[in-house]
Amino acid sequence: MAERGYVEQATHEEEIRALLGQESVTFYIGFDPTADSLHVGHFIQVMVMMHMQQAGHRPIAIIGGGTAMVGDPSGKTDMRKMLTQEQIQKNAASFKKQFSRFIDFGEGKALMVNNADWLLNLNYIEFLRDIGKHFSVNRMLTFECFKNRLEKGLSFLEFNYMLMQSYDFLELYRRYNCKLQLGGNDQWSNILGGVELIRRADEGAAYGLTFKLLTTSEGKKMGKTESGAIWLDGEKTSPYDFYQYWRNVDDRDVENCLSLLTFLPMTEVRRLGALEGAEINKAKEILAFEVTKLVHGAEEAQKAAQAAKALFGGGENSENIPCTELTKSRLAGGMDILTVLTEAGLISSKGEGRRLIQQGGIYVGDNRVEDFTQIISEKDFHEGKLMIRKGKKIYHQIRLMG
Image 1 (cartoon, helix red, strand yellow):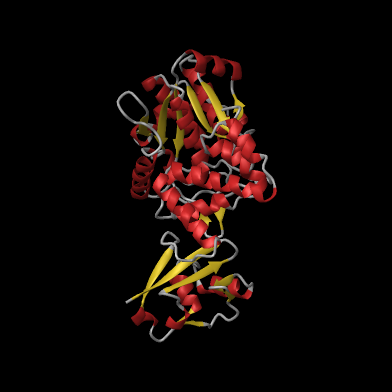
Image 2 (cartoon, helix red, strand yellow):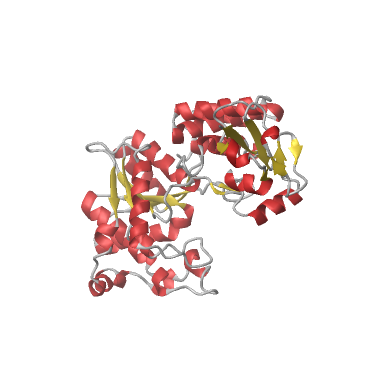
């Protein structure tokens, strides 16, 4: 993991290295179900779990049904939106389904548990007496996750989050002999809280390890586009759009993404990352295919690759490019371009569409749209198909149906 560039910080690096070499270690990573799908930012943690399981260790995926009721202040400048228990339960069910594609939860293998099982029914007075006594408010206020919020205001609700996550680690240590918590580098203070709680409350040996967040060479978080987050759910981000995201990463980010998001040997990662000029596009195609294969399967990855080649090779007839169907009857009197863009899901509002057109960011076929009152009619279609481009990289096909 260190060679591939995952490791950022460790509570006891040499002890962790020795422990992982001596026995099959039970470890955990937590995921708060604040949306109905995992996204690219989560995928680093999923990759870590896969690497660790392949090396003989036992993952526990914690679904934060309890902690999501509060919301983690880490990395946030404002308080998170409060979710209902019903929303959280629905999101948790989606997470479980997605995890099962990556991790083996068979008999004696990985575990998936929900911290709502022990957090929602806690007795508050007992929790304060048994757990709260081990935490120093002065020390907590030195952590970045809290310091960043003090100016705007930190609610007592969020201040409890560290105690809740630390208690998760203690519960898992007691129930499953879980000795190691992993997470993104933004979780460092929460992980420290859990390690110290186990050592104080149970005099147990526990450890923490954090990993790099998925960022560009400029330090910006990856996994966001004009349309929003890049999701692992194919209904929210199509396999084609997912593939295209990785196909279009900056040249400087290719080696890092190959290292963190694929299982290619590091010798191959370095060879591909060293390519320059037009040759680097081959490395990007391999990156896009490998990541899409992991998330959506080899068949969808192949379809996405073929669609991209057909499109950029000048053939716009691929069946795998994202498309929207319109009936001839709906198009009979013509349809303005803003309505077409809305129907295709390329814009969230007509105001956004007007701005894009004014900036020269919308193309119909090979022609830039200059007028947001432009009418699209049947004569614009070739063999029942019309290609629309948003910006430089987002393509969408409109198909005319009888």
